[in-house]
Image (tube, rainbow, N blue to C red; front, side, top):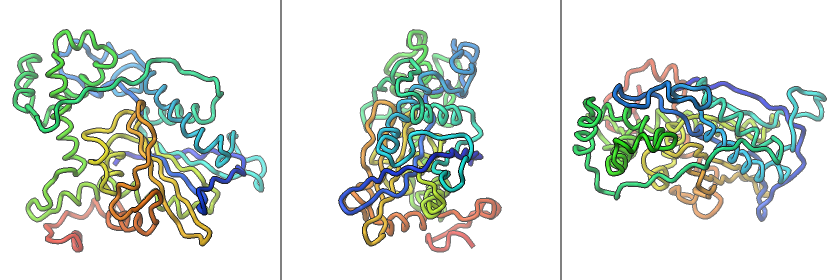
Length: 368
């Protein structure tokens, strides 16, 4: 679990009310992946080493100008949905001025990894910067996929080993996947001078399977008595869904917008808690992929949720809560959402990690 830091933005009270029929929007929770970045690693024989990555701060694992542009555009979407409609204030200040008229209406979390912090700043520039501002750069390209169901795993590993001189295994595939993905955006001519399109697509397809398994998709229900199809999303996603629900409960403090700038693992794990990750994409979500959760109330003060998802810079923000089992229609009753959150709630993480995982037969007694 990556450490999260918090930034509170102080915004003047907004007066806009967003309604849909008899329901009123009360609160918004957003979770997104950072934007396009340089790879975190590469293999020794790669002609493009760390010194070639001069974008952003330079080096491995940093946000590129493309990533900044992606989050600027996402911030523009958030502005059109929640700022220009009056749900949130049109501007914010760095400190409270008058206690009676100022509320902490936005809270922004990000990890200690710099790329999530720069993504958050870029997003806020889009959300609250000049309407005519621009960061420049090119749009995120589509990545062609491999035919579904055909995964030439052994050929991919053998070909990578032959071309790079480095033994490629399923365990080490990420050290090839990372640089290939980054170089396909920033150094395509150099990459495809030695790596064929067929091999590139094969690496992506094999890694999608690996990443799905890491997210808990496609795992067996029982491995030596442990239900991995439950335990993996329980450990990965339960923390963030519980954070969302707690933020919803505390909205009486004046908070109306709560955002988390994080990583691909957290986005996938969040969606997997509700059983819809595999319905939306395979493998990792694209850079700047984002989840937006809206809390609504009706005239009886009963609560409902809408969940939206946008898989990267080229996708639209689309309603996905209707894909959750038990959610019928556009609005999902909060009781259904609470059922999933309760099921995957990890509780105190420090106590949880201190306890060994027991060999279990049922989900009810997974810990003693």
